[in-house]
Image (cartoon, rainbow, N blue to C red):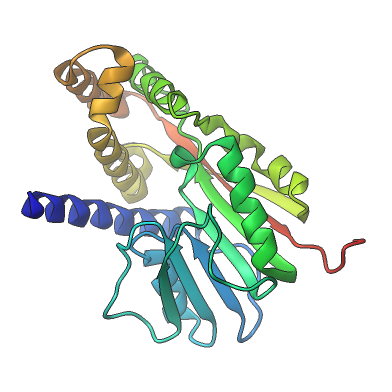
Length: 265
């Protein structure tokens, strides 16, 4: 049992490592907002901390802090300008008010309810210095220009998420949520990430990432569709062919805003 758990965690972490470099290649950057010299940056939900460590390696004078509810981040070998804490950012992190220049968050849409998003933004606002930035990078799970089997699978995925009060379409409204949370100078950038060979190496890797996720959630898809996992697997297999016949893509949103310099601003 413990060995199986180890391989599951290792595979999940490996997928997240790969996912980080797909994002970096597709967006051509790790972050959109400026970080001041000797600044402090926190990543909410850092996972295995690939983004945090990549950034810390590139920016050695910046202090990076990663928090996650699961302690899958490195505990022995990591850049000296990194620190990690086993904390749930939705319940509040153990950092004082107004002490960070940037709060970064990525790929948490599938796990957050509308209320969770409000909590996350409130916590980011709390720990940011006046003038500090909050950035969210999230994928819209809808596959654009998808084939019929692909549409079926992702409709079941949406239904499965709905049972947990999660609405993935919220990624299209993050700018309005940020404004409601008090952030100003809110901006949205959209990126199209190809799915399949037609998109070159990025498209191939993104397709692998997508199917790895679907394999992980197969029991939930079967429950949402009221069918067996075998049936779900057959439909997912049909998706493989569709990625060759359709030039499908997913949209990634990078949304960022700034904490006002003063309450009146």
